Length: 270
Image: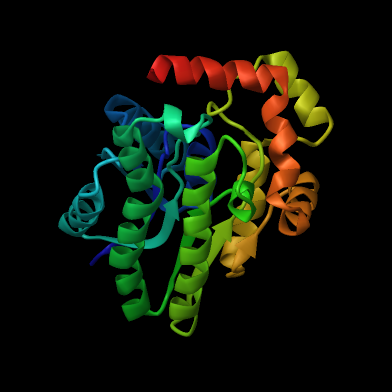
């Protein structure tokens, strides 16, 4: 008989690790997916030892479009039913588009769009047939507006926003929940910040702890909420993003610290 698992991409750090840990603490078996082979095994062993659940560490390069089929076939070969799919893996990209190589663009779109869509296609079909399951798609507050210097990141997250909402309509009547999450700044390794700077951002509510975001997200997921925007600051930011014209953000590109970062990346590409 097949066993039920939660499958989490990017499960070895940041919010992915928190999803794995919190679901394991609630007695869900976990498929740990990332491109860090040894770390996958470490996390899987940790979860098994701490919570007494079954785990499967699964290496996959999610910038390879064929990785979705690889993951699905591996789960089938292990007789695993994925009842919770959390598409979480991602990269932060902050640069002018003309300072980004075409190879990097292809890898980025594959990671953020192609592979999540294919994973949903494969696992959602099984969930709909069983008439149960949950899908979580991690987007971003940048999905709500064309954000200067983040054209690649924001556009792929906007793609996930549209895709997730369409998928919700397709799966809802079959009892399968699809939740798209739009976090703002979350305290994860994606941000190269000093502990002092992180502390200040936490204090003013500009950055949330991964543990908090995940805990609140999972509550909405199991209620089959279609959209979740965590944190008061993010909700306010998204509201203004909806009504603010794009040109209002142009002054951001003139901030000296941001210009230095962007100019250095453009020189590296040249």
